[in-house]
Image (cartoon, rainbow, N blue to C red; front, side, top):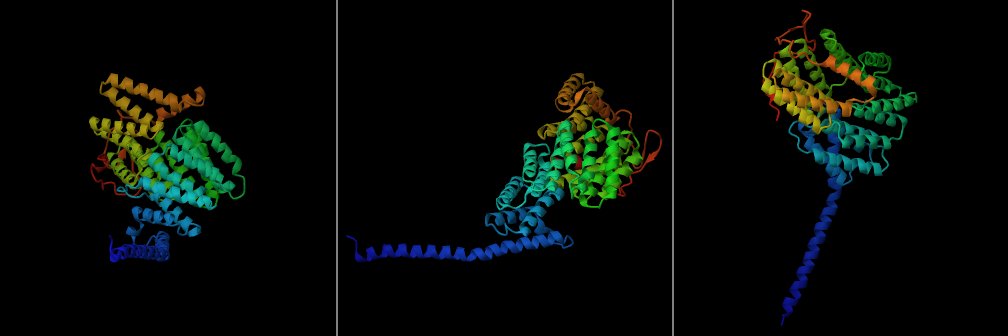
Length: 464
């Protein structure tokens, strides 16, 4: 039989437990305000640092720190209805897309999940999200340029556009996606839609971008027509207010004109145009990475190993920081393979080409795969590996017919003709150090202003 004392003690413990639970719950409730204020203060401080880049607090803008802050803000719904939170999310997305999280970043999926959740909640609150989705699509371009998720985000941006300006910008990004996947007819159709919208007030600043993008579509089939659109984009852009949209479009047009001059073996003019284009455009790491890549291509074709290697190292480092695992690094490996071959290292060239081919297939980058297959075929033929060359050539024909052979026989022949113009002269070209001498006997200098002797070594070739 239980004693009266035992009967009394058990309920007392339950009462004490309930009291403790209530105290803990009350403590948590009382801390919600300070915790929310702490998150808000942290966002405000990071925004001040982003808006004042001269402030030396790089650790506070670490990608992992910013993502953790976004996750806490979204989970506790701190500032969600404010423009300041939208600005913070926009700044974070832009920073990740343009500048990159750093080579050691390992939270890609967490970043995507956090930004997805934030955009979804803003959408439910009735906030405009089209621009945020387009910046998110720019981030996807770094990690899966031609992937389905990038396309889905672009289409979501178009669906959620509220103004003609928003829809036009979404369509422009969609056209560029179709160019990346070599679907030039669909890119042209989308650009036709853009052209029909550009006469609406407040959208004229996008005309240079439309003209420039039209030039890119033609760049892979008709250099003469492409050059006409690039020149028009530059003329219209130089007469327009110098907004970032306009400057980037004009800068890109100059860069492509430089590539056309390079295909014509006009090395000095090609380099000058590329440097001019970079001076006009923004200095985001992704754009600078491609700038160095294009300079490397020209210098290698012009016969300079030192300058080419310098720019390849710069390009590879910028791509590593941005974590560009898609088309950019594939193109770096392709040019590295050409450099290795011209230096007599056939084994390294073959390794780099196979790595690039594998990555091109993984990222649905048929144009890049074709370039790599063409170089590999030439390498196999020059090594008397005729069986391997036949297999590689067969694969190239299949890729071309599946992805590039669109628009009828005339377009196919035009693209083949353009491809021939870009074919590197692997046998005839001799590698020289320092200033290069082109085949016409003229010395070619890189006008970028950098000290090309500062080459790290083999680090650029050792990417895992």
